[in-house]
Amino acid sequence: MKIIFLLLVMFVAACDSPRDQPVSSIVSLHTELGGDAKGYERACGPEAFIFPQDHGAHPSFRNEWWYITGNVQSDNTDFGFHVTFFRVANQPGKPENQSAWAASQFYMGHFAVTAAGQKSIRAHERFARAAAGLAGAEVINSGARVWLDDWELKTDTPGVWTLNVADGDEQIELTLTAEKPEVLQGNSGYSQKSADPCNASFYYTLPRLRAEGAIGIGNETYTVEGSAWLDREWSSSALASDQVGWDWFALQLDDGRDMMFYQLRKADGSADPYSHAVEIDKAGVKRTIPVPELEITTWWQSPAGARYPVAGQLSRSDTEEVIFFEPLIENQELLLTVRYWEGAIMLKNENGGRIGHGYLELTGY
Image (cartoon, rainbow, N blue to C red; front, side, top):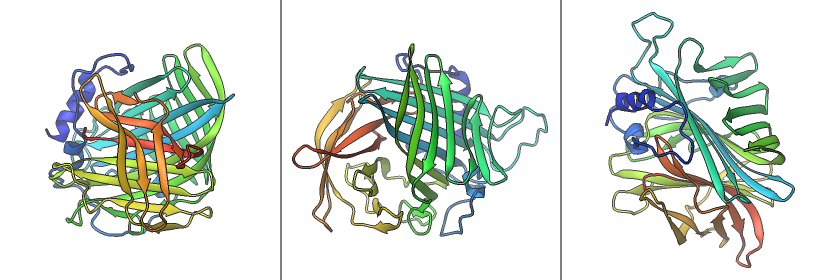
């Protein structure tokens, strides 16, 4: 399956796929993040990051995303939310056709809201070409903006972002204020994913943002507050041929620490040695830590066929700390053009007391 097939799927798909509608075509994230990257720029070693420029698009790379997850509350009701803007190139360089509609860059957007009280997840997606003002990403003075139709993530002031997405009866309107600076993942932002040094991405994180605003579900609008996480990655080939997916954790602990851990999975089910973990202290200082041991206690069977590991524990060898995690609700699978499990999780200690929250992404199942 080539990248052009992904784009064809995008434009024959409906502009919106509600959570309860079947999906006729599923695209493999592994296929789109691996394979031939001829003609595209690749991440092959550390490079300097410059802000706000790196908040904007990097069109010489094949793939890119702006990825926001969060856990918020309203009157003791828990919500999880997830918004992603994907940029995909179907050819290196600009299109030869100079029409205002010609585009070599395309955007896909996902957003989902998990409502603990309703035991439901509601997800939507949209597609547009980066032409005629339909979608894009740009740097504006001291900030940046990414949009797809009327979905928008924007920063006008350093450290302050606004997020506005809506579709049907669901909407997210939030102000996100950074409580820690940008964290450059991997080696100064160069995140190597396999033995090939060019199977890598440029990757940075805003690990803790204060989230304030509103979430709408059905006829109800909830005033919410809580915390969010922003990830930015761009690459042209991030996965090796024997890697089938990943388990990714973004953890925000009540003591002020944040942790990011991803386990890359091989086709035989084993963890790839290029799996990676970091801890970020209260001041925003990152340090690489040994990859935690992941033990699964609960698997959730999707009606669509996949089986996902949704609860378990992370055990650290350096501190002997054990973090137990469980989902806000078990069914947080996104049955969109790209199928994956993306969900809010609660963090607990060995006595069952809550010690934080986070987000878990499961792909390749």
